[in-house]
Amino acid sequence: MIPQTMRAMVLERPGAPLHARTLPVPTPARGQVLLRVAACAVCRTDLHVVDGELPDPALPLVPGHEIVGHVIAHGDGAGRHPIGSRVGVPWLGWTCGQCRYCRADAENLCPSARFTGYTLQGGYAEYVAADERFCFALPATYDDVHAAPLLCAGLIGHRAYRMAREHPFGGPVDRVGLYGFGAAAHLIAQLAVAEGCEVLAFTRPGDAAAQQHARDLGACWAGDADQPPAQALDAALIFAPVGALVPAALAALRPGGTLICAGIHMSDIPSFPYRLLWQERSVRSVANLTREDGDRFLARAAGVALRVDAAHYPLARANEALDDLRQGRLQGAAVLLP
Image 1: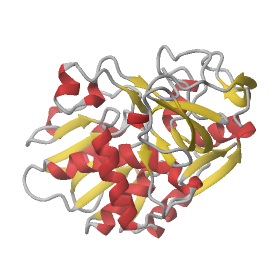
Image 2: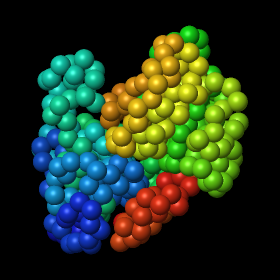
Image 3: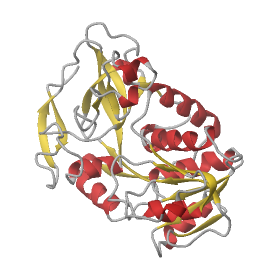
Image 4: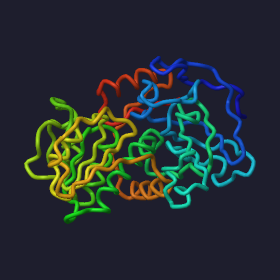
């Protein structure tokens, strides 16, 4: 039996803490499924929403977009995921399907897109309704806690990594630098090592714990982000929301190397000399993801057996989890458990 009310953590004003509230359980609309939330990971994008760095959230808002849940009801026309099945809900929650981007297999750039835990209600709750077309089947090899971080840290990290490796200039991409070693980097480092890459991890200066974490997961070198590598990088992925890392990472790239900015928000990029960009180095950003990205990454994760480091918190301690992320106290991901 589906209850009438649920517990949720709600953002009522950007810059303020989340508040525990009792809300009606959502009724799934046409094409939606109703999920009983089993776990929801805490993403840095959640932090940008809560701290007011992303504009116009759908207030009052239940954040959270790395949701693992079990289907308990269908809206009209839904049925892709049977009752009882376990699915994952990512950041991209709806697209128009008709614009030039959707028609060109670039739905991640749809100007009408809606996003889970930002412009759609998210998973810091006991129940959530989601468009079944944008829900993923999850590898059975990961339990709920360890599947949740795959749904953004893994997906966006994989899109950034694939973007760097599939369009190389000046030779293969075998030496990859990761700037910021948190939830995304700790997953992509393992995938890159499994595919034969040398991985270098660049952390905030003096963060010995993060550097050891990177070495434990296969990085051949880990050190401060203000240190240049001994050899030039083929590609660099920036996961930290720090614009000052852009010129530092460009300086570490070989000619023809690619720099991918993998976050949805970054502080201002300082000016830098043209020589850092010259010799066909490139800077690109990653925006959201496509459903194809999700299918490709989750299939890959099923075969690689990624170690997902996750600290779990009761739902009521969501503010504590966000602050641990804000202060850099996590090794891996935080996951909320209703």
